[in-house]
Length: 560
Image 1 (cartoon, rainbow, N blue to C red):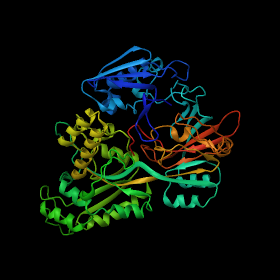
Image 2 (image 1 turned 90 degrees about the horizontal axis):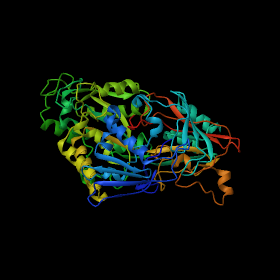
Image 3 (image 1 turned 60 degrees about the vertical axis):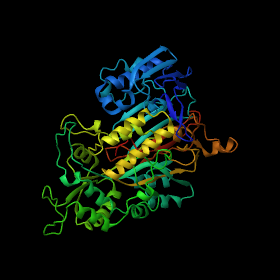
Image 4 (image 1 turned 45 degrees about the vertical axis):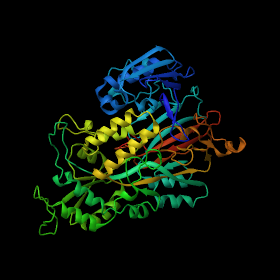
């Protein structure tokens, strides 16, 4: 619905023009000047101006809720000026690499949002003007969302009328609908579902690397900025030796082979392998799968006594190493992984107590520090600053209250210093080196164990072609930070008529045709409802037909 100043280039995630057609930085790397595309307009016909960007950034600075989540993107802006409609000048206190991205901030219309009394309570009202290829037509929470295409989209309109997100209760029902020709796109499939769909000659299955990860996380001790403790986490998990010992028995290769049927890679850090410049490969430092090494770590750390059940005892608290494991009951794959974990960790004389929970209460318990080990997933963004900020000490709460702004209450001053350094590193290679060093520190501290990066398994009707991937060389269609996936899709027969099937361009242009249908997908990337959410694409009015697409919902924080 909205465009940022700068987009991710579809080829390689480098900065590409968005609402800003060009930009430059001063010699001292403190003043950034952005030139707004003079063709950019809101869907109500009003021009997009530098004042809109100024308004948006200042709102993120001044609104307490917005700033708590996204302050890292705007707090470095010492001054924001709009000398004319097409020129935005931002001065920072220190050199700042984020200023060359700003991809995660969608610019909002000042002439509309300036009149909203409580913008942090805004959900979405139909027909509000937008700068992107779509605007909101209908919103029914937990049921469906209808986005209507803007025929006058300044950067080239899509060739169809609507995208409709429709909720479904099960992925299996959606798979059947795709097989029956009732829907045309479906993502977040498991290997068994993909195999069934591959047998259908009318369906194409796409399996590509994604930015998504699955992990288990440890409660390292919920506490405030001042060190006041809260929650009920097991005290032994504050000991890195215990966390590292558990890491030694997690066989990630087996999980990839068994759970994913080979459709993924063993996990290392928060940065997915798809982002090659920032991905860190531990190489020889990769944690070896060895119960002997794990037991030796525990013995050396003093966990030598055992209770009558043979479970190790924490020498500090006297509590047995019996850890609760919270996992999402609405994600069957987690139950399978838990079975492996229970057996693996038992080799360390540590007991795990699996506790299935629905997603929303599980998140509430982890936010409050009421857990020992918890499952989770994340869709990592191309720029490290906002995601890795969740691992900084600044994200610990001021008061002993629940927070979803910290990954497991992790705090390491060396990590923080590197986070600050990467923000100021405007040279891409220097910044990449710092980000890799940050991942090494987190890997050694083991606040989480990244189990794997799974591949995106998506399927679509052969009535369609040209779905844009990010990156274009091989990436996801649905789970991407951009509208290439849906914007570039075209009907197969129309593509054939256009000499070889031109599937749109990087600006999101497309055309649509086809039969009436709908679609669905599994919960992922931030949905806390456990519902399946879909997308519907309707064809041009002159064609008079409709096609439905599906994908998951995602919060701004990409949390599951």
